[in-house]
Length: 237
Image (cartoon, rainbow, N blue to C red; front, side, top):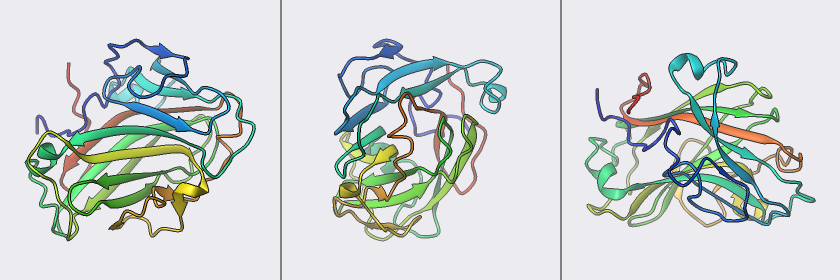
């Protein structure tokens, strides 16, 4: 079962650029391979490689010692074009050669992660395939309890029309949105592949987290693997 996790640095343990960024710079600034972007924010979203402790019930017992933590600034409004996103992009060749029969509806990949929010609400994310016709698969975390780690698992089927070329370009991008405004959302059918429209990154999202000054959002233990079962996280040195 070694080398099954297609996500790189899913345990958030490597942060070569530094463990904290409170500047207005965006992109890859703290935890390696994880990009944090936002738009329309009135204040900076702080990003941290957070060190976990035994009080982090759930991931701590599974061997996780770090998370990627966002700390919200004081946003004065939740406008239609506002968003903040956590992103990892995977090379097309890694998906093409993974063993997932991605054009078959009876072949699956399984996505799992730990998440914690200071606000009790539901959050949305999506998968985006960019080769050929761009397609999107929208998922939700389910209602989270405030300040409580929750394990989320999603089993994702293949679909006709998915394409991953044999190259090192971006092939599959995974998004998670602490907030996303209505210019970028719609009433989409969850857990199914559909053509990307540019306005279906996620479903309409509560603004509770976005409008709460110093609200926090953390993820760790991110794993994407071929098959319809979430196995124990593959810890790597």
